[in-house]
Length: 231
Image (cartoon, rainbow, N blue to C red):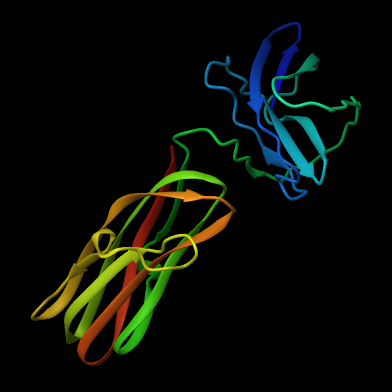
């Protein structure tokens, strides 16, 4: 874990920020990702700091995102945890307009989500079946996971639908973590999947799944949202 302090000053303004960043071997897969400032840091609106980690080498860069006034930047790096680290500072001026994804620094409370709106509903046909609705990629850590599903069947009588979020390893969770509903008429069923805790030991994809059965072969449409929050 390293602490990065950056301060930019000019004749008319100054900005400063502090990041505390846990770095793992190849943690960004060789692509730039933007860092989230420590919550106690001052505002740093005209600049951001990105990280790129590949194998045992990690790079940081300062990026101007607003303004045009020339200034001086002072950067310091302090090791909070770890050893055998070597730092090299380089002065390279270049242009990169790509907006990177946010680096997952492992902070508690981080929310992961995947939403399938009704306009992009997943379709399924037949009298019964099981469908993966959506998924989220989770890194190593502890998470609360939950979701909700809406199922529409306009041309047949649906008598049961169930939904759940897979357990790590792709297995169906215990019945107490599944949601079921039934209808005796043309159905628009809504299901709320109970919240539960999971522990992820290697990065995985977690899927939200629905099972359904109808009294006649038809097409159903499914939308919903899947969430996970690190704790």
